[in-house]
Image 1 (tube, rainbow, N blue to C red):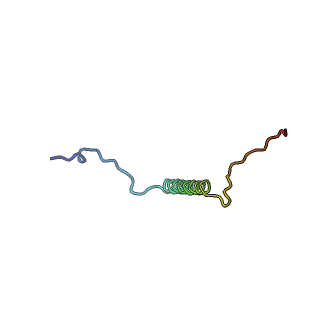
Image 2: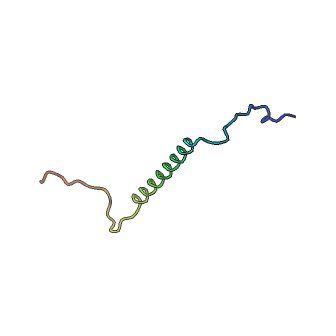
Image 3: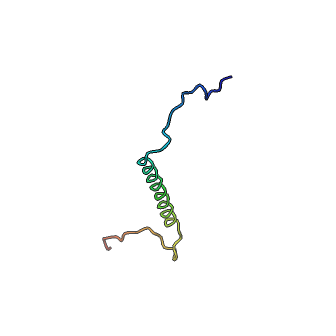
Length: 66
């Protein structure tokens, strides 16, 4: 009986990952982590209740006086 995995050609991968690729992977992971941190901070600020019940929206005053 032959297993399916025995029939597939084996792809050879180098035993060590080049330093440049490893550095790029670390940089991408750091960037993703930083983006998640920024997004959670922004979300927290936007959803936080205000002390006096003020809203963050700015309503411009009318330029014309009646």
